[in-house]
Length: 121
Ligand SMILES: [Zn+2]
Image (cartoon, rainbow, N blue to C red):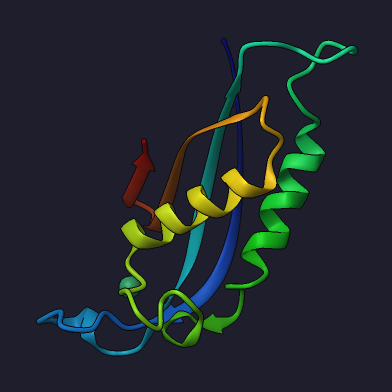
């Protein structure tokens, strides 16, 4: 197996509904996102996929969230825009955008320097 990972970031505001504490109020984060993918085989030129392409696909997806209020962006209108739910949303969305030969391993979302959530199946 070959594992590849990239990191990128986006900035967005959110508020956690039903949370008793400071995170109930609107506030922002510079979210850091790590995407990890894997593949059993390499292509003709000996790579799983171009890092540049993986970054572009991820950035295009995250542009839906960047500089937004997450609470008004679907599906976070219905589920809380927690790091956990954001990680799963990125996981599910990337799965649809990547070729079948590539598997999404995990998505890790940091909302601060030392707090992160990871989703994997
Ligand atoms: Zn927060």
